[in-house]
Figure (tube, rainbow, N blue to C red):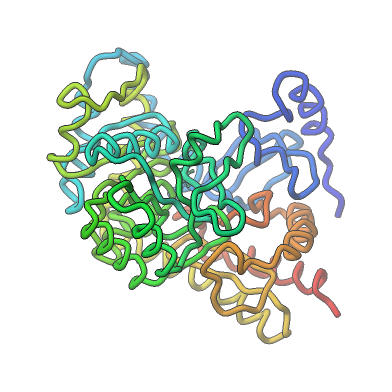
Length: 433
Ligand SMILES: *Cc1c(COP(=O)(O)O)cnc(C)c1O
């Protein structure tokens, strides 16, 4: 079946006049699947509809925030209710206290929190805090982790033996990139060497403890514990960037899953119930360095926005209900296992990696993939075909081979069985010998 997408095509023709690439965030442009973006009109539960009226089961879920699916009634009601009282005051509201209390009372790893407007702001501020607190300037990040688009984080591994990075975006001065040491994931020696080479200079290690922005590069628990230990013995702060994994892999994220206590945790995505919210949190002692208590400056006109707080409270409240994550994770395992069993049975070289309700389909038969360099780049060509085939069958996956998928509580077992069947059918077509 060929999709009728003339309305989306028309809107795209117009949007490229207004925005670079026709979009307000690059991956939406469908460049890596060589298509043109679908313009989405509405979402309900696990489904979205585009401007041409095509219906899809959505596994992008706004790139992670929609853990309850689209238009969940508690979130819609909470937003509507708050809307009648105004949209923003630039003064404190009790909603900020409520969301903070919900999070902090149920999280043993952080004592104070600051709300911001995006994941990028959260990680950018967390790094400034780590530098302010330690008085050191270098940071370590890992190839295959994404932490938003702040200057010192748009850095990739340098060539050869150079341990500090080179900028991965035009407009980032090399002098900034030189403050960022980029290392491969899952490599104890590389981290140990960096601490030897830059003794007393490393303010923080920042890591996605479950890296989910370049495939799903699951790290060993022992490796994360090693990072905790080496940070402690060097007076370096460990930052868990849980913008994706926070409230996704259980209420307390990866920190809670492995009981590893990072010094700073960043949140985003789920925390705002589909509205723009990010946050960073730490011990009261570390957070006392943030202005106005301390001299690390960080501010925001719309931070703690009441509508966004109301949506966040509504979503987080649902997540705290008994058995929420068990059910979500069980449903996801069933879905993932059915695809993996099918591929094994038919000797198709595809493996779906997953953790909780995050999954990533890789065109490979490797049993584990733990670093960016282990990903076979040829998979992207096959993913392109899969993506297009699935849109035609009514399944919406993220438009890039390197992006993960998300299952929400709105995906019923029936929806997941249907989706798994269509994915398996497509893989049969694509991978037929
Ligand atoms: C999405 C993401 C960010 C950036 O968040 P934005 O809200 O897009 O700025 C940072 N870190 C991680 C781990 C993310 O997944």
